Image (cartoon, rainbow, N blue to C red):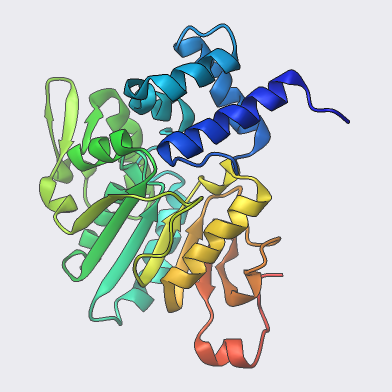
Length: 286
């Protein structure tokens, strides 16, 4: 069946973004990227996606704003508190056996997940032995994450999530409120490396013990999901942990046999030790 005009426009626009600026959105799910491109079209007051393509090709100044339209920044601190409680109670005891740790927060957006992990690791005595890598495709998101400033009206939800995650102290221990915003303690990010990274095109950059990529893969098509999971697999040390979102799974991935279900309900997986990969495959994610 011939492609519609809109399908052709979307294909050409995504190709223009990739070739001109090296941001690859071609592997995002069709419904998700179509919705975001339509939003961008309205935002830039373009009569068609073709007009937006012309603007993209000839006006580099719009790129930061375009990335804000095409990427997702919706998150919250300690989102899904039961996940963080499971992390605290079942994963942290294993991590405590290592003299040093590396954690990759992939698709960190404005930093809510990063600060949640940093706070949890501090509470569990792991922060000073951990290096965090916070990566995102959008440099504007990374700047927000590095600033660690959130609207004060979001703090009650963050506080309740933090309490339900199993913390024994108040979230207020970690921020200062001023001028309608909460500024989180800069020492929480003192051991964090912020960097641009595109799961669609970039390679592995470090060996880590934990990868947190929650509620990112749902926006990718199957092929890009598999590529990202392959990156996580190659990044993780044997016995390392992978955390996905509640609606995400390794079930259909070509890399599923590398992982074992650890806390299935919370989508926490563990990369099998080398001896298990070489022999037994029981409890693989199939």
